[in-house]
Image 1 (cartoon, rainbow, N blue to C red):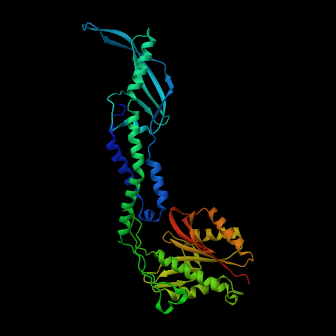
Image 2 (cartoon, one colour; image 1 turned 60 degrees about the horizontal axis):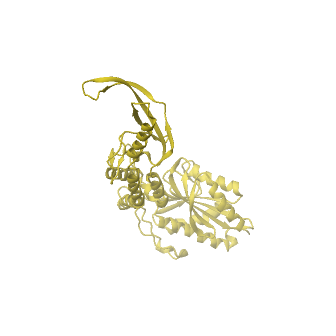
Image 3 (cartoon, one colour; image 1 turned 180 degrees about the vertical axis):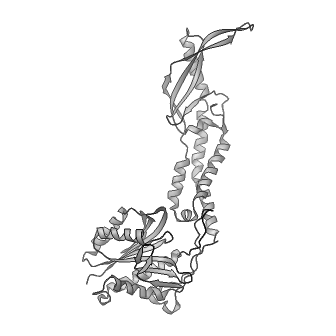
Length: 405
């Protein structure tokens, strides 16, 4: 290639910006709205940040000459004569983004030459023609001159690199915001359920009125048939979890509500409240979903689609806890179930030790993505993914109640 003379920096900058935009636009709506923004932005910055070029003169390697018989014009201009021409390859190690050898910097020195870039080995080479092997000093002078000439724009292109790297975070933030704002405005084919707290039971735990919230629909490939599915709004999800948490804490102070009850009996306490507190929601237990019967499912009454799935278990140690999570995610959750909970009934005396075990153990599960805060002293929020689809993220709450009598 002709060194530093194939694409202008301005065109290269526009090309990289377009590539970033393309990566963002190819992500699904669900991904853009569900991903940790800072992590995704940092990923894009790390992918498109440029490393300045640096040529290691100390690594210079002079290769065995290639000898060619060529006809050269004589000085009198009357003809030509045959002679041996020595093509000597000279190589240097380099560090930095290899594509920069192609970029015509905004400030440019009108020097250059043909170079060969091995991007994988990070080696850049050029050839020098030698006609007279009797004068090695002339070769050395020519070698130095060519080096200074062909790499004269390294500093100039590195100034453009510094400019790009400085503005890159702003470029990523702007492009991500444009796409996210677009998805937030869209409501075609997908809306959050308009769940309102039943006014007849509004005083129970002071549950707030849940206003309608529009949740975006993940982008669907053109070759797939679209199926509209409702999704529970985050505010509603938070209210459901608060309702369960407040009820469980109340039961902790009234042992008669849990004494001698099995999982089904304790679950029915929760169902009794959930099926009456929300309009347009039906709450059922031991309901078949995907691959088995789960303890609690809240469904959108008009179309019978799931909005919340939960499983209830007595605490039987870390191993059983891990198995309960796997059972929930592998057996009961379908791709469209995005909000779920595991409700634990703990009979151990040392409740603090159990809570610490939960917080440490949950992070070792294969589906764990990250912690997502705490809702209370014994209610912990996480982001998990589905085992059959690592890109599908699920809001997962672990709620523990101390039933030690």
